[in-house]
Amino acid sequence: MSDTKAVRITLAALTRVEYTELLQVPASMTSDQLDDLVRQRYQDVDGGLYYDDPHYWERSPSCQWADASAEDQTPSGAVTVSEHGALVITQIA
Image 1 (cartoon, helix red, strand yellow):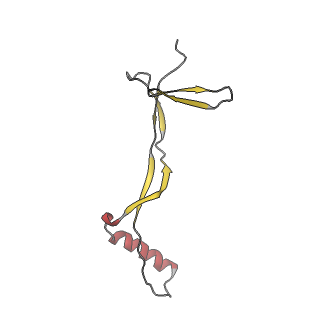
Image 2 (cartoon, rainbow, N blue to C red):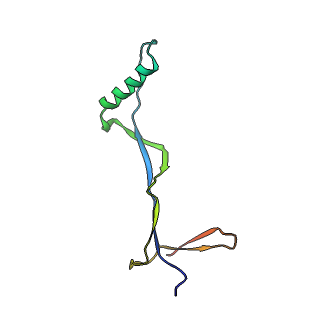
Image 3 (tube, rainbow, N blue to C red):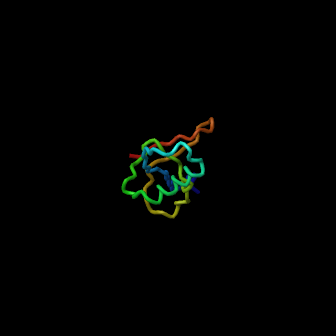
């Protein structure tokens, strides 16, 4: 019986694209009207005008692991657990 098993780790991140513009609006506009303006601009602005936001990076809920024991591939790394419980990841060249 082997004391290791293969698992496949899948990582995903959510990134963001955004569009920004500066508009002059009447000082009397209410918060509800400004919210309506945001919704309207979201409908009007072409997605091609959006740009990558390099500062936004969020872990995706689809980060996961799966049993890969049945796969016929060579692992890219190995994990051991230190005497203090820390995970030690070793890359295999």
